Image 1: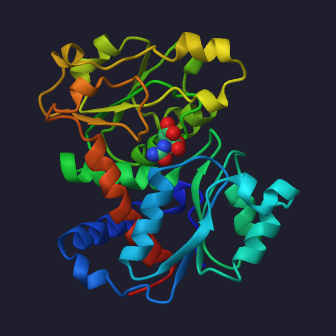
Image 2: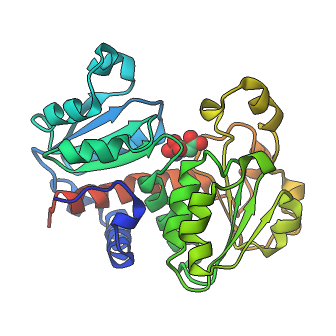
Length: 304
Ligand code: NCD
């Protein structure tokens, strides 16, 4: 049995395979409508979510399966003090596969050690978010055609933004990739991520506070939300929340074929007036999330 806890649990060949399946699902949805008949996905969400949970549920439904679960910790037995390990040990008796989001870093890993069914990390605290990365990779592949030789700007909350950490881990495996890390000093990429995936591999990178200066170099601009829920005090959040606001005028010296990605939800960091720009890919990206999760469910359940 295989779990997806960290994006590096998948080889680049396995990622290619998932992307090929997702492409085929997009082209031939009818072929997949019965693939998971009588299978059940449990979504155990101890933290808020719209896209991740609903796209997982829609994915299982489109494969002909069923879904069960909860969307807040308060409505589960964790409110009574149950451990995640015990919760998954029990839910594994009701469902064939589990997608779990938890505010504590490492909770899905702990869960996977006690689970009899595959566990998917649907976001653990400020740590990782591998299925968002699969969504991002499918978007990059469809928009740019490949993963090699891309200069990727990551902008906003690089400290607490788990999607950023997983995306850097994934992209660091491709030839010719460069990173431009754009954030306020207080929200810089944690050194454990930088050391493991950028420095140790000798990948070229720049660190800057200026989105304007970085803009002309970028093939991909990955905007992120300042992660309010991870701040220790509100004052810091209020001071930093509007550090970057992407507006049409800031895009004037961007490449014409640059892709703008954002895992969403957006708060203020991309003006709605950018949505009509040809380079804005974030709503398409959210849509792709369902297809890559369908591919992932098929793979983890070993459905042909
Ligand atoms: C992200 C997350 O939960 O980390 N959202 C998502 O899953 N698409 C990004 C965020 O909440 O800012």
